[in-house]
Length: 399
Image (cartoon, rainbow, N blue to C red):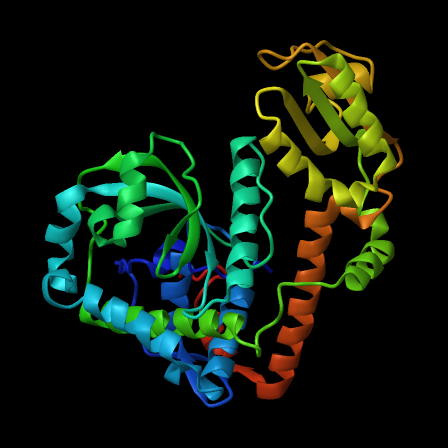
């Protein structure tokens, strides 16, 4: 079950209309009593990301909020600062009664975003690591793929009132064309990559009531608690050691079989055929795991004269690889380049090492650790559910 992400929904809080606000008790986690209305609010908020088991996601979400509350993470400075930010958003001119006028100033945008959250006092090394991750994500999005690391918050196609976004988001979105990805940028909440796909000027989405406001503020607190938990030493780590990744891959190797042949290697293009050949020989002698430390700086140093792309290529994904490795199709060199060579290995029977499918293995390994961690929380608190109330709602929260 993927982690429930804050994304844009934590940057602004749009209330949901048309739901019954009954106080029927749905479940209890430890001392926390959770109403049917909370589940209905959650499920409608999640409509943009349909789930096969919305109820299970909801329970895991509340379970983490209960644990964070017990740890008193709501007393931490980061939590208080972020909560104060939302209290400011909805006070004075941005109070719920003013949502219509505020939203109508700049209209709405349908936005997709990826976020790596940063604590208030982040170390330089951690900052550098998160920036590298977002740079890699931006590169993959530019290529039409999406390599999302565990711990990256994703929000897809969410309608947002532009005037209620943080200033950093507004400034970036104003510079983007439709469906254009932004380069990674910072806000008080972390580092982000965003794009917008649609605009609208009407304010029909803004509706508020006192009951919905109460649910909204409960959800804000729970979202911030879960976020604080994930950033603390008590949350499940989104990192796996080399040993853990290798062991997980070997135990689940059959899950990563390919239907089509792949190539693990590099495509080297350059103006000078002799230089291309020289680079090929150097890479051939070097372990593949070290390429990532060499190739980016090489491309930067020889910009305009040489370009090296590397990774795992499925047949049909790169014209040069298709022709030079698999012997099919044709290719065109990059402008100004006169020579191309490849170096690497065909993978006909599937990935040989976990690095061949590193992102998938890492995400799956982290998810396994997360499920084990959640199982421990379920055992710690116990979950009592009123089945008679559950019968009145579907698994997606609808009546």
